[in-house]
Image 1: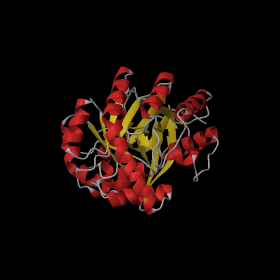
Image 2: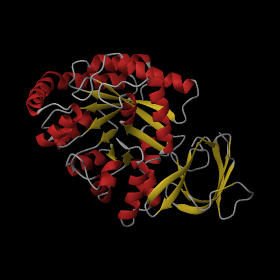
Image 3: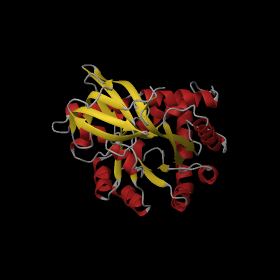
Image 4: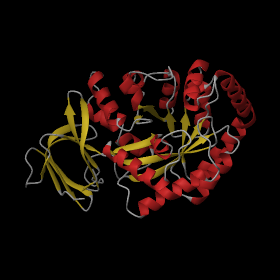
Length: 380
């Protein structure tokens, strides 16, 4: 891997503007920049776009490496390394690894699985075999019997930076449509209709039994540990009021314009899936991310289940929404998620910021990541 001290002849995207010029790097930081011709020769970017490294707050993709097929468990270290490489190849230089606790229909794990996985990622990072910066996002299935105990195991042993509060009860939130719930869980589990009905009844029982007390325990745990909280799939005013009371800082995938608007007005950053932008709508039939962007209610994009969608989604917003612009679109995948996660040393191209940079070719068929740098060192 090589370190680059000067990038020239680049289309540089700042937080609020863009220009053709150069960037100087020293000690892993951006130390100078300017328009036009560089003061000396450096890496000729040939007019390609140079954007800040992307910050990913919510990706499900680690799971697909760990369990590439039903009942197939892949070696953890090799799964993590492959997943890390895919993140970086997608332009993501800081990734919040989504680690689930609480058994659900499509996810059944032993109580210590999450702790072991977080420990394995930390060990890989310490050994220098990972290219991106990694942080932990603990996704808690609130109603699951083991959710609180499993979350405590991780938080007591490792640094956790974000906790999301998830409720996938059929007939609520993301799955207000029972048919959408059946399609999703039927596809994930392969269960026939009769078994799905039993599962639906069981999940509703767990909601009645555990939701209120588990949510309170998880929120207290997060605040006591200094962990930021994300709501998940808020749909109505009651959900948002609950999120405000719990002092969440991030609203993941609100399912309605109302929930997004109320969250935004309360100072809660609104995150939506980039696949939603790329596909032109939600696969669950909920509100479209682009619709929220047009209303000024979208703060952050997440790659969710397709890492490459982060770049595609941002460029899609810039191209399809008149006046949106590339700087604003790139903010949704760099500056905004970084600041929402209380990270202030990266996420934009500015003097003093980490030289986490993505070189992008913008072709007719879509943007392509050509090179990625972390602290000025090429990692892809």
